[in-house]
Image (cartoon, rainbow, N blue to C red; front, side, top):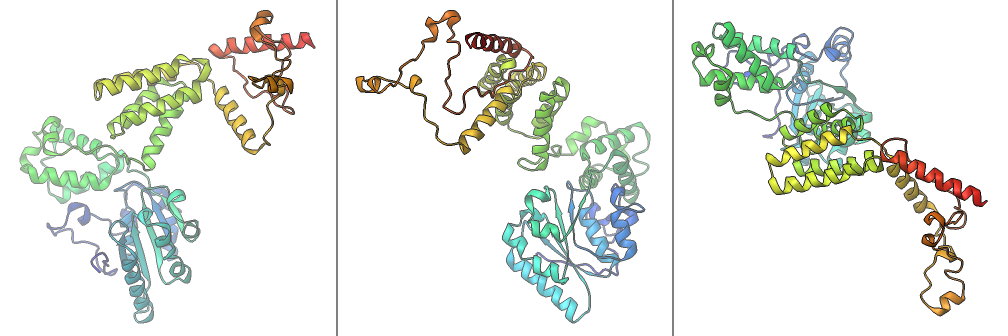
Length: 447
C-alpha cells in the first residue's frame, strides 16, 4: 500500500519544527480559518465553512490550479470530522490501490465505527471505468469522496460521479494572499532580519511574481533560496542574482489542459473583438508558457478565414506568409512575423458571413435529399447527352450583357432563390454587397 497514506485526525498534520519536512508541508493550515486565499469557500456563510460548522461531511470535487489548497482542505476535513484520511494519486495508482482503499474503509466502518475520506489527487487522470469503481461506495456512504483536479470536471469526470459530488472552484492565490503566506514562512525560517530593507523587499516582490498564484511554488522557492544563501546575505541580493539561484519555472500553462484552451480562446476572442493590445498580450502569454508557435500560426489562419473572411482577404495571405516566415526563421526571429499577423488580424475588418454561409449549406446538404443537377447546367460532352437535353438552354455568362446571365438559376429544383451568403457592410464585403445587390436588380428587371 505504498501509494496510500493516512494521518491521525486527532493530531497535527505536520510538525512545524521538523526541518526534514519540506516547508510547504510544515506550513499546511491546521484549521479552516488558516486557509489562505479561498474566502469565497471558507469565509463566514460560505459553502465549506457551513459544512464544517454544521458537521455535514459530503463528497466533493475541488477544482483549481496547483498550489491553492486542495489537499490541505481535504486533510482539514479529515481532522475536523475525526475521519480516516486515505489518499490515492491517480498518477501512480490503479484498480489495485482503489480496492485496497475500499477494504480499508470497510474496516474503518465495521470495526472502528469510523468514517473514511477517500482523497483522489489528479482524479481526472483516472479513466471512466476507474471513476465508475468509486460510484457504489460513494452512493452507499462507505466513503466520502474528495477528488482534486486541475482540469474542468465537466469534461474529465463521469456525469454519474459529478452528480454525487459538489464541485468547488479554487482560485489562484492573489498577490495579497501570497504575501501573507510569504511573511509567515519567512518568520518560520527566522529570516525576518534578512528580508528587511529595500533589497529584501525586492526579493519578496520577485518571489511573489514568479510564484504565479501557486502557494506551494512560493514556499519551495523560498526554501530553495534560504538554503542556497546565508540568511544575512539575502538582503543584499538583487533580482538578477536571485534568478541565478532559483531555477525559473514557466508560467501556469498546461499544454492540452484547461489553461491552454482558456488562453487560446482569449487570443481568438481578442482578435475577433479588434483589440490588438489584448491579442498581442495573449499571444505572448502562450509563447511564454511554451505553446508551439506552429500551433499558434495555424490558429491565426483559422481566425483569418472564420472572423475576417472576405471583409479583408489580405488577412489570410498575411497569416499564411507569417506561418511560412516562421518556418524559415524559427524562434525567436520568426515569432515577430506571427506577432505582426496577430496585430493585423485584430485591426482588420471583420466578417463571419462566409463562415456562416458555409455552415448553413453544409448542414442543409447533410440532411437534405440528393437533388439532381439541373439539366441546363449539366456537362454534355457526347451527342447522346445533348439529345436527351443535357446542357440545353445554358446561357454562357460571358456572352451576356455585363457578363451576367440575368434571371438564370443554378440551384437544384426546390432551392431556387435561396440565399446563404449575406455579406456585411464592412471592408471589401461592403463592395461585394453592392455588387450582389446590383445583380439582384438585374434579375428583377428581367422578371
